[in-house]
Every structure is written in structure tokens, then in C-alpha cells.
Length: 90
Image (cartoon, rainbow, N blue to C red; front, side, top):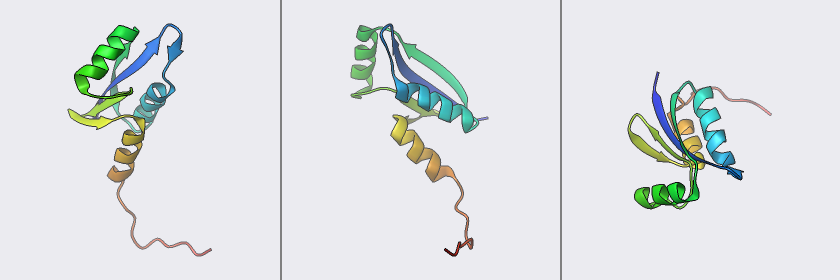
């Protein structure tokens, strides 16, 4: 099973919806998810500065930086094998 590391924000008054969506998508795609939750604004800001990002979540798969939720969807779509010869008539 491939491993994903997810850093997401869950503050006392705000939970990042993209972070929870990324976690759910990773699990549904068969990944073992190691979750790191950023619980304070200073912790979140320091994390974003360290990784040179403007928003969370931040996802790594097998040590490779993927990016945020939209980047994850693009990455997973690119990993799916393309099916050839299947044409639908409409």
C-alpha cells in the first residue's frame, strides 16, 4: 500500500475542508495516510513559511511533494491507466 503524508489545518474555530477532502480522497484511493494536524495559527503560519506555500493542505506521496487538494486530484488522475479502444457513441 502506498503511503501519503498529509498536513492539514484544524483550528479551534476553523477546519480546512480541503484538508479533510484530501484525507478522504487519499483513503478512498487506497493510501495509508499519515496525518499531521496543524492546530494553531502560529503553527500553521510557521509550517507554510517553512514549505513556501500559501495554503494548506500539503500532501506528500512516497516522499514526493504533490501539493494541495487540486494538485492531488490532478496527480491521481494522471496515475490512472488510460483505456484504449473504448469509444462511446452518443
